[in-house]
Length: 131
Image (cartoon, rainbow, N blue to C red):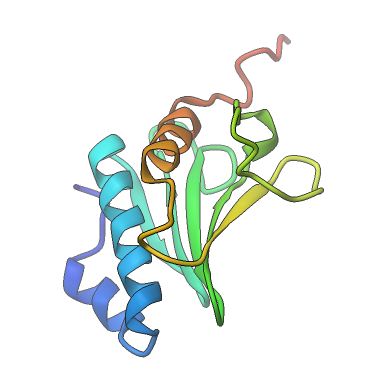
């Protein structure tokens, strides 16, 4: 977890969030750490982002982001429109960005969340560009 922030920093950032949302965010963080231990973690105003610094910055090499809202955690993928999503978990109408809402830890489709994060970590937005 070379590019990950110390756990106490993340927990301090999340300290005023409801326990149920904090639990979801920390589980997603744990999944990202397992799938992409080389990822760079950053704290933003409303959440956390993860990208692969060996491939670029937070947009070009974005893996995912976590934002906390009043009643849910939003897991977003900057290149989500290009990820295979057979269960239709992702929503959004932007050019490339997609997200899913997670309202409870118990009802979250953790296996599919892991699959989406893995697909995003492997995605290369410039792979088919020639020139």
